[in-house]
Image 1 (cartoon, one colour):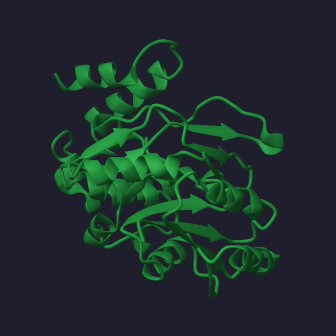
Image 2 (image 1 turned 90 degrees about the horizontal axis):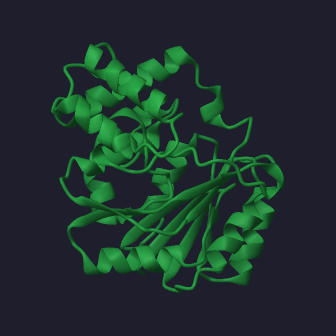
Length: 268
């Protein structure tokens, strides 16, 4: 098996068919899809079971509710693909993505992560402005610029230890990508959009308080000191970090200005 797609779902059955249909629509067929039901109280199991009966590449893993980190890690354990791709139950893959990403990993051993632009949208499929900044290793230290549905090798995922339960309150995907980047490989960004991700008012990220966010940023520092210390003494409390954060916020409001160029100026 080439690609394992891990779809985690907790009480999002109203969106799940769109996510699974986008898996079925892939123009690349060497995949399996592990649907992880994280103890949902809605119709997630019924919907997932229908897809399992429709296509043998789907499998359903039923868990008691334990959070998205446990659900994703258990989904990986239940899978067998050489490459991994995580998909939230309310998001949608573009049909060419899995095949193109797998082709990159097949042909370039120096590439650790394959991703691409994501198009956020609200209810009713209305597209809104892009919220994820363009990827660069520098930007990743200040703000996560890789969405959860980026593709990576199972072997590299295992080397990081997987999603860290210490990040249960949030930013667990950012923590994972920083762990991969510490391996000193490349990230390949495909030019075309690869994911549509849904903006929901009740999403976990919308509920993170400022105090919790600061603590999570502290944990990122503790988990990846070697990577951060190339640029910062301490990424939360030092002037260097505040200058970097201010630079991003200021430039994000200026059309036509590349964030990366400004960030590089800080370190000259």
